[in-house]
Image (cartoon, rainbow, N blue to C red):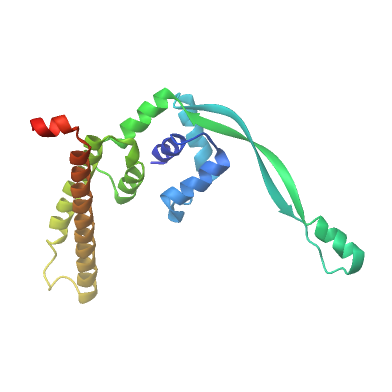
Length: 206
Protein backbone atom coordinates (compact mmCIF):
# COMPACT_ATOMS: atom_id res chain seq x y z
CA UNK A 1 0.00 0.00 0.00
CA UNK A 2 2.87 2.40 0.72
CA UNK A 3 4.16 2.08 -2.84
CA UNK A 4 0.68 2.82 -4.22
CA UNK A 5 0.39 5.92 -2.04
CA UNK A 6 3.85 7.19 -3.04
CA UNK A 7 3.19 6.66 -6.75
CA UNK A 8 -0.19 8.34 -6.47
CA UNK A 9 1.24 11.42 -4.79
CA UNK A 10 4.10 11.67 -7.28
CA UNK A 11 1.58 11.44 -10.13
CA UNK A 12 0.50 14.94 -9.11
CA UNK A 13 3.94 16.57 -8.93
CA UNK A 14 7.58 15.91 -7.95
CA UNK A 15 8.05 15.89 -4.16
CA UNK A 16 10.93 15.54 -1.75
CA UNK A 17 10.98 13.02 1.07
CA UNK A 18 9.89 15.37 3.84
CA UNK A 19 6.84 16.58 1.88
CA UNK A 20 6.03 13.01 0.86
CA UNK A 21 6.03 11.92 4.51
CA UNK A 22 3.73 14.80 5.42
CA UNK A 23 1.26 14.05 2.62
CA UNK A 24 1.37 10.30 3.28
CA UNK A 25 0.37 10.92 6.88
CA UNK A 26 -2.54 13.04 5.65
CA UNK A 27 -3.57 10.46 3.02
CA UNK A 28 -3.15 7.26 5.02
CA UNK A 29 -4.10 8.71 8.39
CA UNK A 30 -2.17 9.17 11.64
CA UNK A 31 -2.62 5.55 12.75
CA UNK A 32 -0.27 4.39 10.00
CA UNK A 33 2.60 6.31 11.55
CA UNK A 34 4.64 6.67 8.36
CA UNK A 35 8.29 7.15 9.30
CA UNK A 36 11.39 7.97 7.31
CA UNK A 37 12.56 4.47 8.23
CA UNK A 38 9.77 2.99 6.11
CA UNK A 39 9.52 5.74 3.48
CA UNK A 40 13.10 5.85 2.22
CA UNK A 41 13.44 2.07 1.71
CA UNK A 42 10.19 2.24 -0.31
CA UNK A 43 11.62 5.11 -2.37
CA UNK A 44 14.79 3.10 -3.00
CA UNK A 45 12.78 0.08 -4.13
CA UNK A 46 10.70 2.19 -6.49
CA UNK A 47 13.81 3.91 -7.83
CA UNK A 48 15.60 0.60 -8.41
CA UNK A 49 12.57 -0.74 -10.29
CA UNK A 50 12.52 2.35 -12.51
CA UNK A 51 9.15 3.57 -11.25
CA UNK A 52 10.54 6.86 -9.96
CA UNK A 53 13.66 8.92 -10.57
CA UNK A 54 15.40 11.87 -9.01
CA UNK A 55 14.08 15.22 -10.19
CA UNK A 56 16.93 17.38 -8.98
CA UNK A 57 16.93 19.21 -5.69
CA UNK A 58 14.40 21.54 -4.09
CA UNK A 59 15.54 24.33 -1.78
CA UNK A 60 13.13 25.10 1.04
CA UNK A 61 13.15 28.04 3.43
CA UNK A 62 12.00 27.76 7.02
CA UNK A 63 12.15 29.97 10.09
CA UNK A 64 14.05 28.96 13.21
CA UNK A 65 13.12 30.54 16.52
CA UNK A 66 15.85 31.73 18.86
CA UNK A 67 14.98 31.89 22.60
CA UNK A 68 14.89 35.47 23.92
CA UNK A 69 15.15 34.70 27.62
CA UNK A 70 13.94 37.25 30.14
CA UNK A 71 16.46 40.05 29.57
CA UNK A 72 15.33 43.68 29.51
CA UNK A 73 16.40 46.73 27.54
CA UNK A 74 18.45 46.84 24.37
CA UNK A 75 19.76 43.28 24.74
CA UNK A 76 16.21 41.90 24.79
CA UNK A 77 15.29 43.99 21.73
CA UNK A 78 18.30 42.67 19.87
CA UNK A 79 17.36 39.09 20.74
CA UNK A 80 13.80 39.70 19.54
CA UNK A 81 15.10 40.93 16.20
CA UNK A 82 17.08 37.71 15.91
CA UNK A 83 14.15 35.54 16.94
CA UNK A 84 13.08 34.34 13.48
CA UNK A 85 16.03 33.26 11.39
CA UNK A 86 15.32 31.97 7.88
CA UNK A 87 17.19 28.78 7.11
CA UNK A 88 17.61 27.22 3.69
CA UNK A 89 17.77 23.46 3.15
CA UNK A 90 18.22 21.49 -0.04
CA UNK A 91 16.19 18.29 -0.36
CA UNK A 92 16.25 15.57 -3.01
CA UNK A 93 13.03 15.43 -5.04
CA UNK A 94 11.49 12.46 -6.85
CA UNK A 95 9.20 12.23 -9.85
CA UNK A 96 7.18 9.51 -11.56
CA UNK A 97 8.50 7.81 -14.71
CA UNK A 98 6.44 6.27 -17.49
CA UNK A 99 7.00 2.74 -16.10
CA UNK A 100 5.96 4.18 -12.75
CA UNK A 101 2.71 5.44 -14.21
CA UNK A 102 2.05 1.97 -15.60
CA UNK A 103 2.79 0.41 -12.20
CA UNK A 104 0.52 2.94 -10.50
CA UNK A 105 -2.32 2.12 -12.90
CA UNK A 106 -1.78 -1.61 -12.34
CA UNK A 107 -1.92 -1.26 -8.56
CA UNK A 108 -4.92 1.03 -8.76
CA UNK A 109 -6.94 -1.34 -10.95
CA UNK A 110 -5.89 -4.58 -9.24
CA UNK A 111 -8.93 -6.79 -8.65
CA UNK A 112 -7.48 -8.34 -5.49
CA UNK A 113 -9.70 -8.16 -2.42
CA UNK A 114 -8.93 -4.87 -0.69
CA UNK A 115 -9.10 -4.20 3.02
CA UNK A 116 -10.85 -1.03 4.15
CA UNK A 117 -7.76 1.16 4.12
CA UNK A 118 -6.56 -0.03 0.73
CA UNK A 119 -9.95 0.67 -0.81
CA UNK A 120 -10.01 4.15 0.79
CA UNK A 121 -6.57 4.84 -0.68
CA UNK A 122 -7.64 3.69 -4.14
CA UNK A 123 -10.77 5.80 -3.92
CA UNK A 124 -8.67 8.88 -3.09
CA UNK A 125 -6.83 8.37 -6.41
CA UNK A 126 -9.96 7.46 -8.38
CA UNK A 127 -9.61 10.60 -10.50
CA UNK A 128 -6.78 8.92 -12.39
CA UNK A 129 -9.10 6.14 -13.63
CA UNK A 130 -11.47 6.29 -16.57
CA UNK A 131 -15.20 5.81 -16.05
CA UNK A 132 -15.40 2.03 -16.59
CA UNK A 133 -12.41 1.43 -14.30
CA UNK A 134 -13.93 3.60 -11.56
CA UNK A 135 -17.20 1.72 -11.85
CA UNK A 136 -15.40 -1.63 -11.71
CA UNK A 137 -13.60 -0.56 -8.51
CA UNK A 138 -16.88 0.45 -6.87
CA UNK A 139 -18.69 -2.70 -7.95
CA UNK A 140 -15.90 -4.92 -6.59
CA UNK A 141 -16.22 -3.09 -3.29
CA UNK A 142 -19.99 -3.55 -3.34
CA UNK A 143 -19.61 -7.31 -3.84
CA UNK A 144 -17.12 -7.45 -0.96
CA UNK A 145 -19.44 -5.54 1.38
CA UNK A 146 -22.44 -7.64 0.36
CA UNK A 147 -20.53 -10.79 1.27
CA UNK A 148 -19.40 -9.25 4.55
CA UNK A 149 -22.95 -8.23 5.42
CA UNK A 150 -24.29 -11.71 4.77
CA UNK A 151 -21.56 -13.17 6.95
CA UNK A 152 -22.16 -10.73 9.80
CA UNK A 153 -25.85 -11.59 9.89
CA UNK A 154 -25.01 -15.22 10.59
CA UNK A 155 -24.43 -14.46 14.28
CA UNK A 156 -24.20 -17.12 16.98
CA UNK A 157 -27.28 -17.94 18.98
CA UNK A 158 -28.09 -16.03 22.15
CA UNK A 159 -26.90 -18.97 24.23
CA UNK A 160 -23.31 -18.65 23.06
CA UNK A 161 -22.70 -14.88 23.36
CA UNK A 162 -23.47 -12.23 25.94
CA UNK A 163 -25.33 -9.01 25.24
CA UNK A 164 -22.14 -6.94 24.89
CA UNK A 165 -20.73 -9.19 22.19
CA UNK A 166 -24.11 -9.21 20.47
CA UNK A 167 -24.17 -5.41 20.57
CA UNK A 168 -20.72 -5.30 18.97
CA UNK A 169 -21.80 -7.68 16.20
CA UNK A 170 -24.92 -5.62 15.56
CA UNK A 171 -22.80 -2.47 15.36
CA UNK A 172 -20.56 -4.09 12.75
CA UNK A 173 -23.61 -5.14 10.75
CA UNK A 174 -25.02 -1.62 10.83
CA UNK A 175 -21.65 -0.15 9.84
CA UNK A 176 -21.35 -2.54 6.91
CA UNK A 177 -24.87 -1.70 5.78
CA UNK A 178 -24.05 2.00 6.01
CA UNK A 179 -20.93 1.50 3.87
CA UNK A 180 -22.94 -0.54 1.38
CA UNK A 181 -25.55 2.23 1.06
CA UNK A 182 -22.75 4.73 0.50
CA UNK A 183 -21.18 2.59 -2.24
CA UNK A 184 -24.59 2.20 -3.91
CA UNK A 185 -24.88 6.01 -4.01
CA UNK A 186 -21.39 6.33 -5.52
CA UNK A 187 -22.22 3.71 -8.16
CA UNK A 188 -25.45 5.48 -9.08
CA UNK A 189 -23.65 8.82 -9.34
CA UNK A 190 -20.87 7.29 -11.45
CA UNK A 191 -23.33 5.70 -13.87
CA UNK A 192 -25.23 8.97 -14.22
CA UNK A 193 -21.98 10.87 -14.83
CA UNK A 194 -20.92 8.40 -17.52
CA UNK A 195 -24.29 8.70 -19.26
CA UNK A 196 -24.02 12.49 -19.18
CA UNK A 197 -20.50 12.33 -20.64
CA UNK A 198 -21.54 10.23 -23.65
CA UNK A 199 -21.46 12.02 -27.01
CA UNK A 200 -24.91 13.07 -28.27
CA UNK A 201 -24.57 10.90 -31.38
CA UNK A 202 -23.85 7.83 -29.25
CA UNK A 203 -26.85 8.57 -27.05
CA UNK A 204 -29.08 9.00 -30.10
CA UNK A 205 -27.94 5.74 -31.67
CA UNK A 206 -28.57 3.89 -28.39
